[in-house]
View 1 (tube, rainbow, N blue to C red):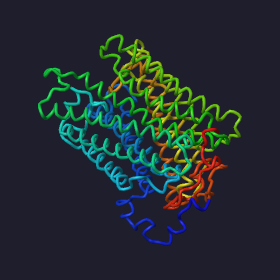
View 2 (tube, rainbow, N blue to C red):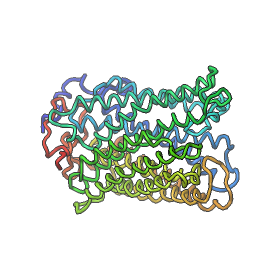
View 3 (spheres, rainbow, N blue to C red):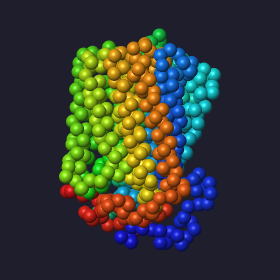
Length: 539
């Protein structure tokens, strides 16, 4: 498909290639460059956030106060969450979107390249501001990532900087989302109908709408906090006639769709990888689209399951309990479809598939513990215990982060033109899987036994499980250095076997019709989409 490749005339004009030196990155408008910057940034933040997690786990290795001041411990729990959510997982998926969506739909670039550049460069500023709060009077925010009043209003000098950095993260996300929507709806190859789009593109389209819907809500909530602190309003101050519980409602109206923003693109990634290594089309492509859309819709009507202990009326508890349980249905459809895709497939177990299978198994564990938390009378016992921490880390670490790693292993040969070291990749998978379970599985037990979260000290009966979890955390953290080394070998040192155009054995999709590494400019002429190339909806 020579029409799909634009490198022939791209190389003949200087202005078509990348700029020299630092200008290439600062002024970047090419979707591949911006995608790369997002991915590098998120990996950096992943290690920063991970280092904070290790501070938390060092403190909890033994009962008693060991290494850090309790106030600093709370700062670490808050910063770890903010950095991992807004600085590691979300930018990584936006990086994948930037890199892959134009390639998957046959577009020459993203629709709004200059805005794309801006949406990236806001992020280092936002996290620079957030990181600087560690050095301010009163320390970094220590109220948890939820920023609940009145506690958050006790933050020292860092408070306005926290609010401003959250605003910047939100602006970046909204601009990224607008770009994704416009690109997908306006720039697809001529005969690529919506239902012929790959699942990764579909999940990102849905995610982008979620982002645009909920990010302004967060912005509103934190602005109200700001005015409560500095302008004498009483939105959330009970003394002035406000209601601190109202903040929780507004925050979780953002916060629950947010967790689906972090998992839907992961569903998309896994839906690309499993068919490739099963050597079969995705089972039930259309039902996957409907399931993802249903999850997105339901995510808006379940927020108060985070608030079963605030004293809401029984009717409210019942509604949110049943709505939450309902999300298990479309999620179950997805899991079934992935299993059905693998059923009787000619499977080979390369690293991307291993991470996808790890995702499938452990994400399901996280889903089941979520159903336990959805039961209102049970949740009153589990609430604010380590059981909740176990639940959301099972869906975020072996869920979102494993899917991200699977995506990197899957597409990196296409990005760099080199295969990664398969043996090291498998070693990375097994180390990560063993240690992630060693870290988070014991938390279910200590949580059910009553160990509260976000507390630097604990009763001696929890000591054994906590020491196991801390060893697991250090093991998991150190095994990610192996991942960084694999990526470095492949991307920077250019070691490894040269990748073919298809990379894997007969994968489906337009991204496999361009050379490896992917040329700086692709699809100057829109490609023709046949049933052979795209995941057609009739299978």
